[in-house]
Length: 261
Image (tube, rainbow, N blue to C red):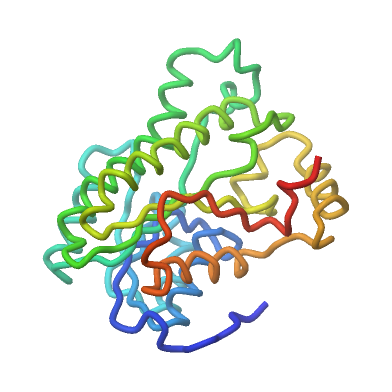
């Protein structure tokens, strides 16, 4: 799917960080393509050397001048990325946080049985990492900006097999509201984007995910699955000044699936 261009220079002069690209099927990649198509300059991160093989060609495609590793489990890497942004650009207009993780044994079991270590890891990577990025981005957003994270419908209702990740996403959405309230006076907006079911690498870890995709396709009012491009364009719009008084929202990009019982 091509990016529907309303104005190719919609975000010209804006600079932002995209975190969470694993390959060309990642939601973060859909966001990167949309922001770049609208004229923004991007900093791109990759998880590790194995991921770098897949992400580096994508970073080149969007002409990212900053391309660095960021693994939340490695001390200092997240700070190094923001230090590089500060020294290279001196400011930042938006951040797209599209990372989440839960150990397989934790994600695959009942919430009531979740081990403490697995719970803490899930919350650390899936929720606290966004709060930490907001903290590091705040002094760089000298003229305001927008922070985005990715959530899912399983934060609001019980989705079979989503388990502890639903708990983490609920915490993440609450964090969005508190951050929006705290950073709003500085002109910094905060949003959670809630895409419908998408066939990404991260989703492949959810049992019976193919059944969820089919259910989404047949029940959503739009009667079709969304694409990473759909998510990217919706996210990019919220970074524009036209959306300057929209903040603290959970934006569903799911063909209307969330309104159907």
